[in-house]
Length: 431
Image 1 (tube, one colour):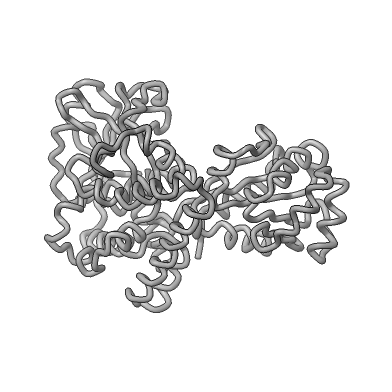
Image 2: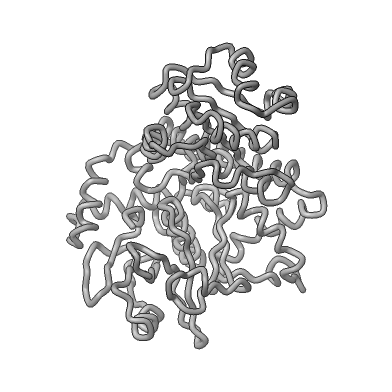
């Protein structure tokens, strides 16, 4: 399956200022597969080390982390000669070896001719919450997210449809009706399957929703195991409570996260660390409210008001045990959840494109679902689950802040009218 990360990796390999690369992201997003596939295609050989399944590797780094000392030993352990520029060195689950992470600094300074990629499913948690000596400024960083809608369509063999969608997005011209309806059907399928590569692969091979749900259940269980294995003892229960409660909060009309919905009398001090763990692990995404949508948005962030979305749509539907048919055929039973589900989908598409998202609300209750910085401009994005595009809150925002243009994501076809760019939900990846 084609992944956009491959283009980034090629630019990294050929870049004149290349440093050791750290690829982070949630478990099962395809980090290891993408790295190894790229390495086998673009290098003479790949030397792979996994600190989870090869715990004795830590002893090698305990003695010294100078490249001149490590390279001969790594060549021997890996059973292959490491040649500068021709061999890709891979450190997987690197968060389990602090010294290996620190060694990247010395590879950057003393031996930049070696090509190294380090990966970790819980690297964000380890770096931010433990005592790791992180090689600040000495590494390149990249986050891998689940497959977005574009990658999903490409995996289904719909490359021509992707080209047509991108063309219509750029020109604000409607997609032909038949293609528009087909793309909306694929969008609903994406909500069920999600973007975890293993889930996409198994669905394409079998078209079996039972097998798909089993695969998603295994991934969800691995997340729960990580919460127990890589979390502080007093935080495990709280982290699970928050994670279980995300789908509950997305079912409400007001999707702003509320501690009292986790448990009666819940407070920020009790659950803040649990929320941080989920965000750092890549399992969930937290977006904050901006008091004023001005650049830079981070300066106007309200730290006490935020929303939380899960990283993958398929896992969201599986966790809430939503029958695939209800999503595919737009069952009325989902009416209360459609809004939150659609917001979750859009958040994932924006995150995969590298945006840091926020939302905006006024003292009188008007709310715009997403605010991003795009092309040097602050752009409001209103999200609707169906074709109904009446957006009173967006009108309030436009009247108050006069943005260059606004985006409305819904079931409607492409258009641009009165400063509002209407984009079908399936084309959110074009942003």
